[in-house]
Image (tube, rainbow, N blue to C red; front, top):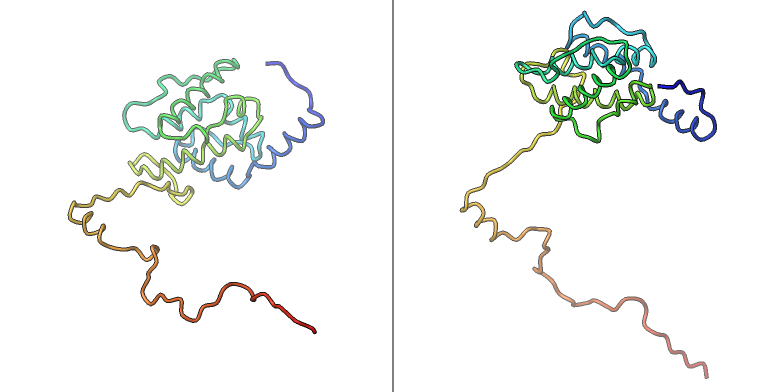
Length: 201
């Protein structure tokens, strides 16, 4: 990939807005979770956005993270550190594919270049946050770390009704339908004042 110089004008403004979305507190929480999930062998990144990007850039830690959320068949078969750009980007893509199969929605996914080129690290944070929430919600024993680091996703609460209960419900008039008890037009007048006809003779 060619190195690009600093951006100017509108490009710089857009990049500045994206950079402001990055959350240093969330970064700290995600680092703690990844280390708890994968073990101390993943090391510790330098604090800050650049350190976080360099830590995850080759895709190895991300692949280890998604593999740690499975008990038996690991989604990423081969994790190999490589200095070559296309190999690193390929591993990031493997993580993204596995995360989508795990249940992370497409709208919560970052693009490979967001991480590799550091274009939008806030999107990387959102993907990891969504993955952590899913792992806590699944509650299959694969999640390691403090459950309070992520909120649980809402789950379907399906209810089954018998035919008898459904028939009973048809006889009930809901309060939102209103009532006609005590309804009367006695004592009501039309809206506004009546037309005044004045004879000044």
